[in-house]
Each structure stands twice: as structure tokens, then as C-alpha cells.
Length: 355
Image (cartoon, rainbow, N blue to C red; front, side):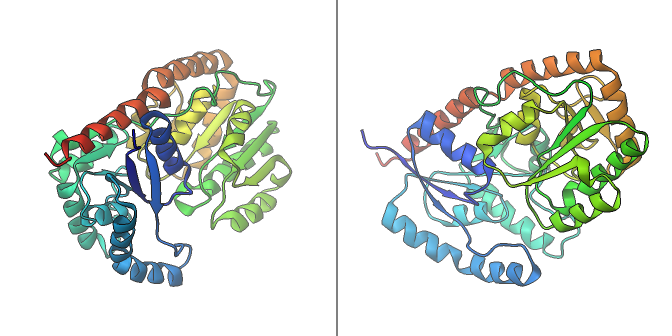
């Protein structure tokens, strides 16, 4: 039987996208073709070029559709690739909201236009992915037809992110796995570890990922006299991540906004105790000092105190990480969740076949 073909619109190099596509290949027997904007958005000049590229993108996508004849189009981000998927002319269309809301930043001058684009994408989509409950709040506000919404995380591969931890118990072995971008507030994390260093508390901090903030953060670590204890590893293959998580006893993430974080699930699966910002996207999964720590945005002093408290309360930490592993197994198992998603796609394709 000929494989069904899906056109994926989005940044195919992102770990989230790779998880999504690989799951569809493995559990849905789909063939995946991809298309993405070629201009990076790493500076103002490129962002302007990217807008021009976006305006003509639909013509290139339609050419690819004529050539490849996909059975379905899926896309990430309701305000960009999701809009292009809605314009593509292919049915069915599934789009995924990436954050708590894709209408970001909230101060953006283009927000009214983004709202129009998003409304169109929501209307035209046959299926809308909310990777977690927090995402449904903005959808309800936008008057989305909620019968089209599937609330389910893609999940993580629990065979790779195994249930073991080999962290050195005598010291804080912390890990950060978020992109080095301003919104992830790595500076707050480094300042917290300066406090630990001044108190004579032993630690190792592993920072994984790449981004515009890397030179600034390296310079700051040196200035704070903690550079010998901070390891900036850059971008690494996802296959290497489980081992590094298993060598860590605390996971830290300090974003100012959050949808559903696969990084958090990965850390929870590997028995890392999570300390994250006290924002709605994180509060969906973490209850303060029950299964992790919640810290106010940009407060490095509270973060330092929470790191010390969690490390000193070993029995609490062990109980919390055990509870988190069970939660991930029950709610974010990649094999189970991706089978559900793949089955839904086959249903949609079959219902759109000509009689």
C-alpha cells in the first residue's frame, strides 16, 4: 500500500519539529516532505528580508504541492507557517500553536495583522494542536471552534530519556537546555550561581544550546568569576542530551513565556529536579515545592535560595523526581501520543478523499 504523504511547513531543524515528523514516520507510516523559509531571523536586516520571502512563499509552496501531491499539510505556528498551510489549497490541514499564544511579542506593532492571519489559519484548519492545556486559553479567547482542537503533547521518547540518574550527589549538578536567547533569561541563572559561589557552595552548571546571547553570557560568567564551573556546550545532537540530563540533579529554565516545554518533560523523565519560572505554562506541570520549584521572573536571589533549599532537602527532591517520572510515563509518552496523532491524521485524510 502506497504511503500517505505529508507536507510539513516549519523549521525542520528544530528538535520539536524533528520529534513530530519522526513520530509520524514511525507510528503513522507517513512519508514527510518539508518546506521552510530560507532567511534566518537572527538580525533586523534578515528579519526584513524574511518578511519579503514570506510574501512570496505561497507560490513556492503551491509549486511544491503540484510536484509532490501531498495528502495533507501540517504546520507549526499559527501566525506564519500555519497561515501558509491554510492558503495552500490542500485538505486536510493541521496547524500547531507553538507557545501560550503565537501573538508574541505582545507589544509588537504587527499584532493586529498577526491576529487577522491567525484567525484565518484557525478557521481554515481541520485540526488544531494544543500541545498542552495552557494553549487552549488563548484559543478560547480567539473564539476557535474547540471541537477541532486536540489537546495532547507530542511527548518524549522514554526509551531514550531513560529512568536513571547518575549525578554526583555531593554537589549541585545543574543543567539548562534552552536556546541562548534573551527571553530565556540565562543571565538570571548565572547571577544566581554567583550567589552560590560566594557562599562556597560547590556546583557544576552545564548550558546546552546556541543563540545570540552566547558571547554575552560567556563574558558575564567570567565577570562573575564562575566561568571555571560553567560549561557552555553549544548546540548538541539530541541523541547526546539524555546522558547529560542523567548526569544532572537539577534542571533550570527561566523563560518569560512558555507553552509546553519538551525540555521540561525530558528533564523530568531523567529524574532532574525542575526549577522553573512561575508562569502559566510551567504551572500546568509544576506545583511549588511539591514536584519542583517555581521562581519569579528575573529574580536571581530567589532562584539561588530555591537551588540551595532543593539541594539541601534531598528526601523531598527524591520523592518529587520519582513522582515526575510517573507523570511523564502516563501523560507524555511519545509512542502512545504520536500513535493517537498519526491515527487522527489518517482519519482526516480518509474523510477528505473524493467519493
